[in-house]
Length: 154
Image (cartoon, rainbow, N blue to C red; front, side):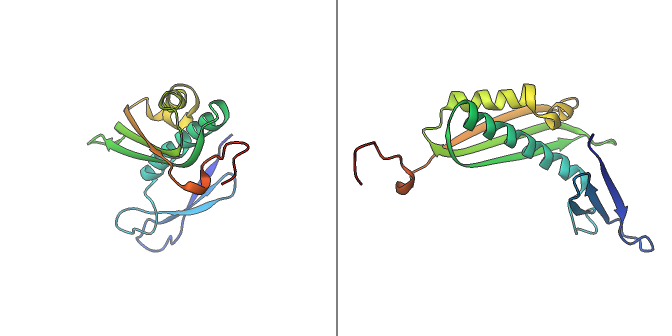
């Protein structure tokens, strides 16, 4: 079971700042645009989607396809409905993978598995939004990280 709670930080003031506590004991401030001391709750949904798919994709790339990933970033942009509830209607997800000889087919399959099978946040968001996913691969060029052939001294 996943749990969370939010508590109003200053109940006698007009601000709407809350402390959110997750079931695993992590805390953060939640706020609105006026207070600007923490993320808005809907921003956490976008962050949750980015994090959920990132965990899936990097795990599949490393464990199933044995890709040499040296860096990874997921960016999420979401359009919302104009009227409440302002659910996500369109989500753009961009994956940037950095590494050595990253196989584009392996990356496409890892993304597909995340979107269709593994990412629970994505499964919920897809109930109201269409996903548009793109990716790029940045080939690593750092000399000291290049594999050295066996029997060759550098």
